[in-house]
Length: 401
Image (tube, one colour):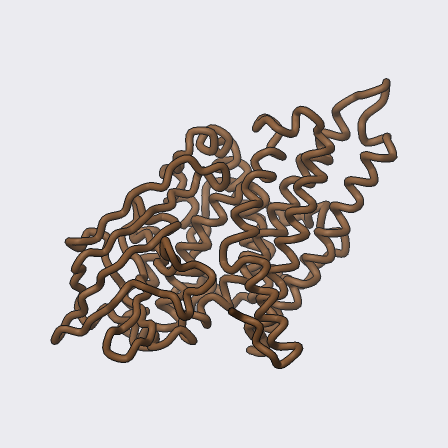
């Protein structure tokens, strides 16, 4: 991690929304890194997000500084600057999301999905080639799994095909909702091998002939994220770009197990961002001759919000501890994602309510968190799909269609 000129002596302070003090789990080095990241985000990122959200544009100027914080380096042996825990990496996702959900999503795609797929499914040469470039921001990555006609049923319904042709593979198909792909350099494409009908993973440079990414317009959530429709027409990639250890959807699921837990952390961060906006507004806004914060009904909304945040934070901290001890299973990350995003959705609505009419304009941040929560609620597995993963684990019966 490269030191930043922004607040080099920043001191870590627990968030007021960390009511039970879960940050005490962190080491001194982890707290120092979080303090620097928070200072950078507050000074360099937060002032930009409202304008870019409204315009549906991405602030490319933040990429070098953002990567200098180590946000895409901490989790991988090839790039991490110091030993760190999954709980710390969760707090990184939380800090990003409490400033802006789109920036957290950019990092989640770059680090959790693109780098994660290569780290978990690549061989030593692939990891050595790509992970440092993704960590530094020299290469911007994407993750191509979801398709126009295949989302929740990706395990069976994937339509993109891969055909081996000597030392190359030929990919045909389409992808949808692929974050970072409109300006990215490389995309991990998941496709079914026509020879054995198994899902395989491929590292595909975005400038490969036949690869076309088109920006998805008219979104009302995560407007800063540059999602793309991708068309793949006879895209030829060398066999060396096939992820060596990505040979079935079980391997894809290994990546998603990690990223679902990270999305749960993002959900907590979004809830915290909305809560902080509501709390600040309640202390300043005067109605009936006194601050909103002195009204019982407002305190009720704030306390219910804090309860949701605290319960969700307890869950994601434990899930991350299980990741460190290699005891986390699919159903654990699925429950964390389903619960935390459901509570996030409830919380941002209450926090928006605190602001009354001002809760539907971007000036006070709550409206942005309210809108962005809808995308987080759905991506990386809907609540219903994650519920079925947990349901299968606790009953022993699969209820998938």
